[in-house]
Amino acid sequence: MDLAFKDRFADTALSLKKSENYCIYIVLSHSSSVISKAIYLYTRDEYTHASISIDRNLEALYGFGRKWPRFPFIGCLRRELMDQGFYSLCKTVPGLILKFDVTEEQYRRIKRLLSFYVKNKDLFKYNFLGFIGYMFKTEIRSKRRFTCSEFVAHLLQSAQVVKFDKPLNLIRPQTFTELGGQIVYKGDLKSFFKNLEKNNSLIV
Image (cartoon, rainbow, N blue to C red; front, side, top):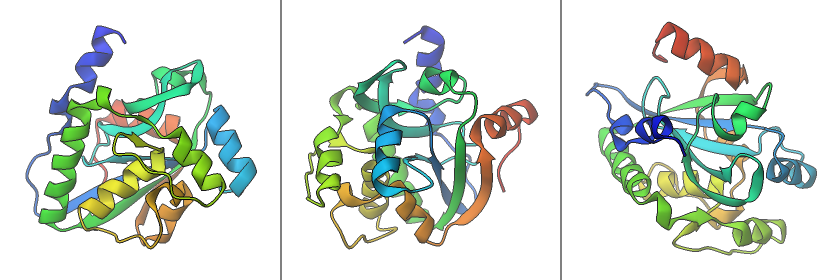
């Protein structure tokens, strides 16, 4: 990991100016990764990966994915950037951005949890056994391992935003489209984030 990326990964990226309205963003995508293809073959879902952000310009987007761009079998919590890591190898990344309004208390709970995981990111790994458990509809959970959607679901449930009626490793990325969030964007995420950065704009 280069120094520039380390700087951009710093937990200061989790800061947000105080606002009367509190919201979080869940970003769903379907890349050309091995895991994504495996999920699609099994579920036929439009989206196979989930990430979360708590800031309105989506500058700090976090998710569990591959640690190294060209090696899919070791995963970890990462700050996801469309111009770095695995995404830099993709020409396009089809995706969906969902906005969820939350209370101030729910927002602060998610912020505290996310800050904890980011600061201790080296302690947490991808839950490959949980992914296999999903294939067999079996609960396989670990305090230090998450699938991408399991991590987002864990944050939402721990902050009392949503109460899921199934084990969290059985939550699919597509499940988040059923929670009533506002669609902010649908299309190529690489183009979206490039324009967002270029125009230095905020999502309403």
